[in-house]
Image (cartoon, rainbow, N blue to C red; front, side):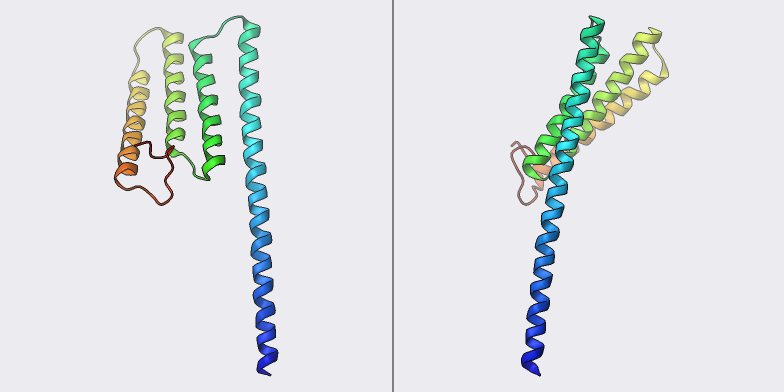
Length: 153
């Protein structure tokens, strides 16, 4: 009876191991597929925005900042693809660029100082402080497996 129990226990362990391996393969495949889909979408959107500028024959500061947003998103996908770590700082850079784009929109439409410009500037300052805190924290308390991209110093 004990030998039979050991056989079932061994079979159970093999089934669990096979399930874990198969599950990891599926998760990794989905991860890669999603990264390629996101990267392709960013590229498609950036190319569309660029050709829209070419068709108009002019690129505004708003358009250029939009291209920077696409660049930062693409860099974020590339870093995540290489390191399997989400570069939070790049998300903050995207937010800062988006707020800058919004602020330029206020300025170019109304051509006068407004409380919205002060609020958006304050938001950019808060995000810049967040980047500073993250950089200080990652330098003082590096995580296991920190890459040069995450911690340049």
